[in-house]
Every structure is written in C-alpha cells, then in structure tokens.
Amino acid sequence: MTLITPGLEEARTDELLLDVHNSLSDLRREFRALKERAEAGEDVRGTELKSKGTDLNTVLVSCQRLETTLAEVRQKRSRIAQGGYALDLDAAGVEVRCALGRLRTCASARHVSE
Image 1 (cartoon, rainbow, N blue to C red):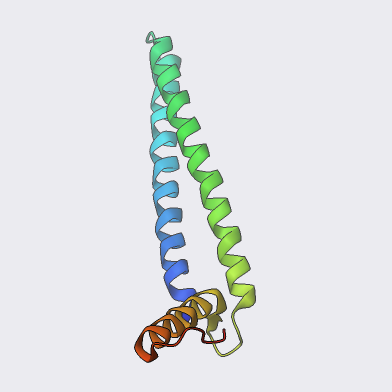
Image 2: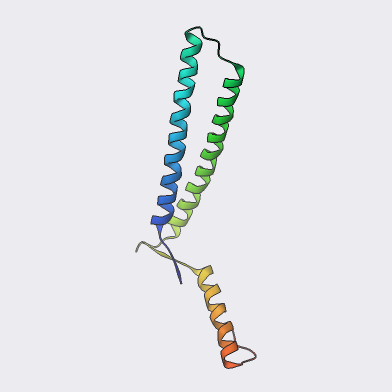
C-alpha cells in the first residue's frame, strides 16, 4: 500500500515558496534600481520597463501555481490521520487488482472475483 505523508509535499512547497520569494526579492531590487535611475535623471528605456513587467508577470504566474500547490497540500493534509499518515486507497486498489491478475495467471483460473 502507498502511504501519504505530509513531509514530502511540505518540502516541495517550501522549495517553491523560497524560489518565488527570491524571484520577488530580485525584482524588487531591480525595480528600485530603475526608480533610482529615473529619479537621478537618467533615461530609462521603455524596453527595460517592459522586460521587468514581463518578469513580474512570470513571477505572478509562479505565485498562482504555488497557491494551487498549497491548496492541494492542505487538502491532502486534511485527509491525513492524526497518527501522521494516511493510506492512498486508489493506489492500494491498483495493487490488489494487479495481485489478482497475477493470481489468475499463476492458478490458470478463468475468473477470480475482485
């Protein structure tokens, strides 16, 4: 049977969260630098602004994916028993059907009930 534990999903989510956080920090620094250049009277090209806008959109899409992942983790977590684990009954069903298939072949049986 397949056990579902919260640790693996949490680690993956933490990694995604850190990546998005780093990307947002980088973009914040880059926007701040552009602002400082503009305030200093330097000519800031529209292509630079457009590029940063595209980067920001990419990070926002990542944030949305992360929100979806967090929702999935919360949903899985709500199904995990108080003992810290839960059984993946779908995977267990597949394993049982495979075992029955092997039993049919091994016993040369025409029909083994499921």
